[in-house]
Length: 256
Image (cartoon, rainbow, N blue to C red; front, side):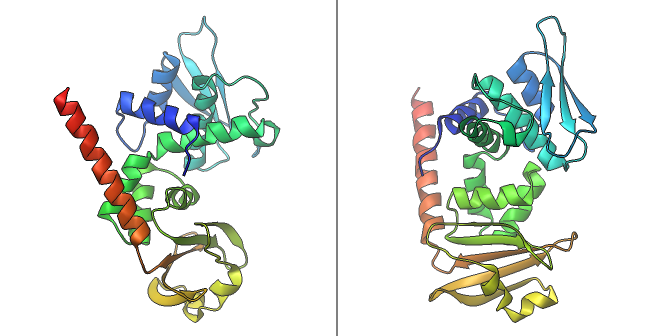
């Protein structure tokens, strides 16, 4: 997977600052902006993310976030706005998602994702917690990101070969899959036990390939399904490569 420049810049920043997680977003903002930061919750329209209020004469910076959005969304919005400043973006930048330049918006999202859930930390967790529902639980608890972001992150990093889908009793809410994996609502509805809302792990078949099906119901009433191919070569190869790379970096640092 080719990484964007924004992702690389975010990783370099994390390596330099060495923050603790879950990330203190106000602390990170102060490091980037060079001033104390105050996070203000405002009653914005739902399509407004966040805005940064700063001038050279100000002794502190106010970052206004949308109180009508969940905490995880507010944290991501702050990281997104910081990305525009840190990356030196010029052009169509807006507090309203739909009005931003698509390329700049994607770059800011990539930066925010790496800042809030760094690749190296996600892979280290994946090495410790192999079952997808366990892994997602610890990502949510340890990084304060949304369920959707946690699932998207695992798919982006190809920790598993498979798919994640979240849905309510009536409709899909989001879905992410690795290339070549086709998971749709019809396949989900074909699993009888899902209607009972049980936490299960059972063998299924996805387009003729053996897979494990995990289903979890959250307090919100929404379901998350993880459909993971039984042959875990992708995960083991990824973790092995990550471990070797980390060892080489450590050895190089010791030699210095």
